[in-house]
Structures are given as structure tokens and as C-alpha cells.
Image 1 (cartoon, helix red, strand yellow):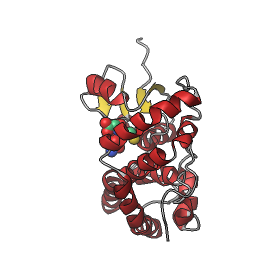
Image 2 (tube, helix red, strand yellow):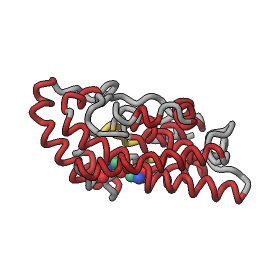
Image 3 (tube, helix red, strand yellow):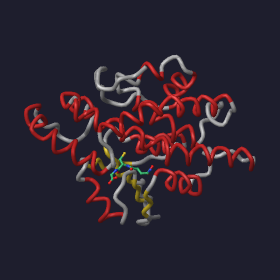
Image 4 (spheres, helix red, strand yellow):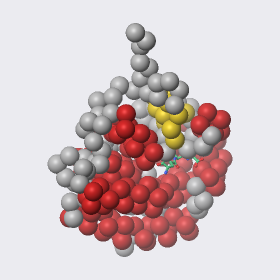
Length: 245
Ligand SMILES: N[C@@H](CCC(=O)N[C@@H](CS)C(=O)NCC(=O)O)C(=O)O
């Protein structure tokens, strides 16, 4: 009998949608291997390998390739139905899918919008986001030299700059209210984590690494929920970058 190859997850260290996929794989007890890519160069590699520039991307036994956190979770449910990532009840399922789509399309980009301008202001914080990476770390003086180039490239890639980030910070409380409402409505935060839990919680946890944003999150129901669902990501930007009320 032919041996079944474990899926290979292409990821960037600390990337929140990559955590989403890892949480789903782990929930289903699927053994997988990871291929860690270095940002922002990873986009060129994934474009060649997957025809799409973003991570997460995954290859399954037989060579099937899937890009995108939501598409990967759908495929995982097809390949390994138990435990399911979506509720069986049709109405509940629609609510979870809508929350997951919001988490992917609206909330997930906020972390990139806010983080890269913060790191441009505090390049000394960049090495903290590499903690736990499998790739060889660059010496601090080299990172210092490269920081303006890396943060400028990432801001361009993610269509952000400092004013855009400040606006996103102002809009964050309304988004956090929405997540608290999803918890109150039982769409997320139930006994069994679902696809929307796995999509939204890693973004909350990444935002908590930004010192100015953490106080906006702590004390809300979503802070404990996010801690229960997703692991603590690497990295810390000291407070004092963004003015918050
Ligand atoms: N929302 C999509 C896209 C993920 C995404 O934008 N990933 C970032 C890393 S967190 C990326 O690969 N960016 C590179 C680029 O935009 O070229 C998903 O959940 O899969």
C-alpha cells in the first residue's frame, strides 16, 4: 500500500491566517508539515507554486494545492469531516460562515494595516516577531539596516501607511463590539470551536501584541475567548505609537 503524504502547509511565521489553518489541522488531529517562508519574499514563491501570492497555502497528498484560509478549512472539512468546523444546522452554519467571511475580509487585514506602520516607527520591535521562527535570525544591526526597506515594502503590499493605520485604530472599537456581539449571540465562543472562532481569534491575539491596542481589548469578553482559542503569537510593539482614547 502507498504511504499517504502529510499535508504541507506553506506559512509565514506569526501570520494570523496561517495560525487559523494550524488550529483547524490540530483540531482535526491531522498530522502536517510546515514550510516556513520569509516575508515579503514569500509572495513570489507562493505565486509560482500556487498561482496566488498569499499564505496560508497547502499541498495535500496527490499534489492538490489550495490557497487561502477559508478555502483550506472548507477542503479540510471535506477530507476529514470529524470534528466538523461548521455547525450541522443550516441557519447556524450560515451565521458562522458570515462571521468567518467578515473575519477574513474585514478584520484580518486590520492587523497588517496597523502592525507594519507601527514597526516602521519601532523597528527595534521587529526581531520580537521572529521569536520561535525556524529560519535563521538576522543579527540586530542587519535588521536595523533592512528595517526601512522591509517595512516600506510591507506597507505598500498591504496598502497602508501611518494615517491609514491611525484611522483603523479609530475604527477598531466598533469591530471589537461586533466580535463581542458574535460571542453574546453564540456564533463563536461555543463549547466546540468553529471556523469563525479559528478565523477571528488569531487576529485578536496579533492585535494584542501592539501595546497601544492591548488596553482596548483587555477586559472585553473577546479577550479571554481569544486566549482560549488561539496561542499567544510572537512579538510586541511597545505603547506610544498610536494615540488612543
Ligand atoms: N485573507 C487571505 C489572505 C492571507 C494573506 O493576505 N496573507 C498574508 C500574510 S498574513 C500574505 O501572504 N501577504 C502577502 C501578499 O499580500 O502578497 C487568507 O486568509 O488566506
